[in-house]
Image (cartoon, rainbow, N blue to C red; front, side, top):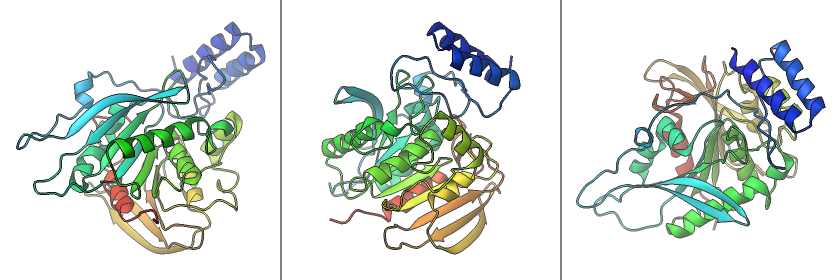
Length: 357
């Protein structure tokens, strides 16, 4: 059976069970029409539950060690790769933390932090394996924290980027993720002026929200195959934005844009590529570079200079690429290993940005 059809029918059954007959009828009609851009809804277990609006599930059946790189042993020291949880104002979140060992003779100076937000159906370990961000962080000494969405908050573990309560400072998931970030900075005695956030798809959309809601915490944003802040406020507008792009620029006129790097495949059929352009809308484009990854995948990189109210930006158009992390590892889900290395380029961009004191 088509997984989309199956998912929609399961949605209809759940809606019927909970007495939401009108929505159940709508779900059945969508299933019969075979609407490719619709997604099944999560079971209604609370006010913050949301419909699935991202990629269809693809479960990777592996034991945890397949996603968890072993520590590097050297002179009695090693990278630290741990799993933990964090609670804030009645909400809790699991996360995985990578702290690279210091190089021999390296001074114990505060280090940068990167918050990574996975896409729908993914886990923190899966995202770490797919992006290979830990490998790149070793070279720069960056600390990487992978937040993990709960299935209770969303049936397929999507961040609720398209709901108004989760698009504001001091509320919902942005508040929880910002508090987690500050907790890690304090715990690791990290450099608060060099804190960054990046994500894929729904995680990319939430990264853009965090950057706009907490410009005092995050010095730069990385968005891969995501949507701009404010692109949607409910399920219908989310589906429209994913299918055709946002109706207008996501950021309001009174919202400044922090330094941002964007990657988006122009063959993405899950999140329309115009969403990536909308993230940098309003900035004046400068130099344009055409290139290829070592495996031959073409890209176009456009640079945007900083301007009043806007940090500098980069937009990478990934030619022929779909809804997947460019240059990632096949050990994780939703990756395109032959593409330009998005993790390396993001980290390069991030480390060139810092908050003003």
